Image (cartoon, rainbow over all chains, first blue to last red):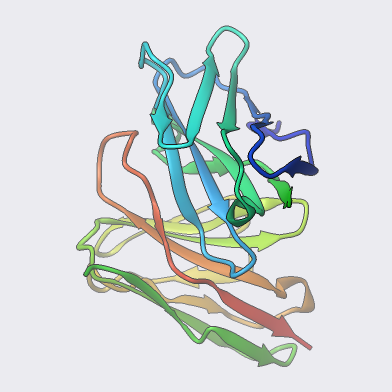
Length: 115
Length: 114
């Protein structure tokens, strides 16, 4: 079964607007972490933000915030005030303590920011 | 600055040949990972290691092997390359233990098997 599901293969967003990337996960482990990575066209993987399963507050890092809804098993990434440089592929990933701390990745969402 | 490097960055080989992709990290991380990235699949784990002489199979390990003789390096070997192994390969590393430890990724190796 797919552990991480990203249902939006591609999205367009206008510059300076906010965009939400969906991520749902499947786990029975009470202890896990959720990560978002950015992959620009140059190919490197850039860590953006982390949310732990026991964290009470949603994680934020600059223009990135994670909308963590534990009961719904969702961890959506919100990018505020989009910039042209945000155009990239975005991956959601999960690490479970019961799974040896390995990362499971979703298929990714491509974001294109329009001027 | 600490980093993780991969070589070569691009490789073209023929079916049946043995190929080794290098991964070197200077973070002094115990954990190292190899992934392949294919369209529609995200990143899938091939092999991983939690320390010297430790290696483990990931979800797509068939046709691949790794060895860990020191902390810094985890080379990935394709024993007999197949066209299905044409992909982009990423190496990653992380420090041991806590679930919040992010993985740091290398720049990737694009492998084409003809």
